[in-house]
Length: 183
Image 1: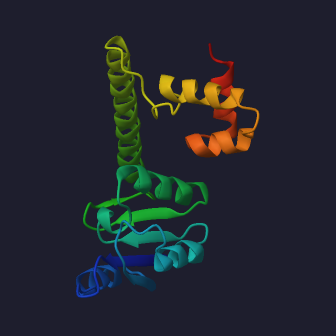
Image 2: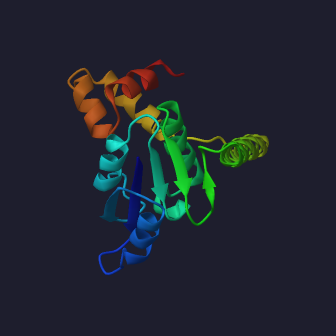
């Protein structure tokens, strides 16, 4: 069975072009949605994916109607593949029920993996360069030398409880005790 999924981003856009193409492609059921691709919760897509069974085919008009990014697209299609469900895209002209369609999708997957590795390498190189210049990532510590000095001074006054000290300084209990251990 062919199940279609059509989506437009805004209420004032029209689904006719996509639904006509999906009907022409032989879809028996078409799920229609007016929702931004950025939305995580797309109710009709979820319904379409739930409706699909082994040997069915999910048909879409164009790749950007299904997923916001290549990573999302690959995840959806790989999940379909794991369940024995085929995937067809009308505009891009591929169908994972064919050997050529599977090849194209494996190429997409390899490109996505390559892109992820390049980004990871660039990030590591950037962090290394920043560390070489004395910059360290992460949130700045609340334990400045002034805060440490104030914590130690207030702690010497036995009339002030530790809770009052950390609340006064705007730090956590753990940071107070860390400050008191520092020399």
